[in-house]
Image 1: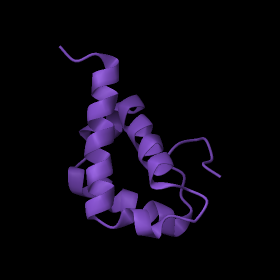
Image 2: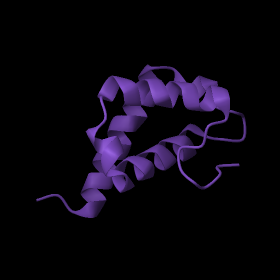
Image 3: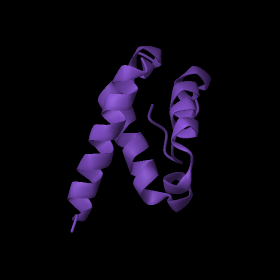
Amino acid sequence: MNTGLETMNNVYANLQSVITQQGIAALLPAQVTPEQFTRTAATALIENADLQKADKQSLVLALTVAPKTDLCLTDEKLL
């Protein structure tokens, strides 16, 4: 059985891979590190049941569009 920490680590690792492979890190503003973006995305995914049910391609698209539009992934600002 996965603990909450194991789940968070798995989600983080999967997102980190996607963010790197899709070139999303290169789209981030200078003041937002790929680690911050990944951690925020992972937290949003874990805390939001609707996101967990979303189509994986849609999630990748949303992660790609977010930095281009200054869209926040959560209610908290990264900047």
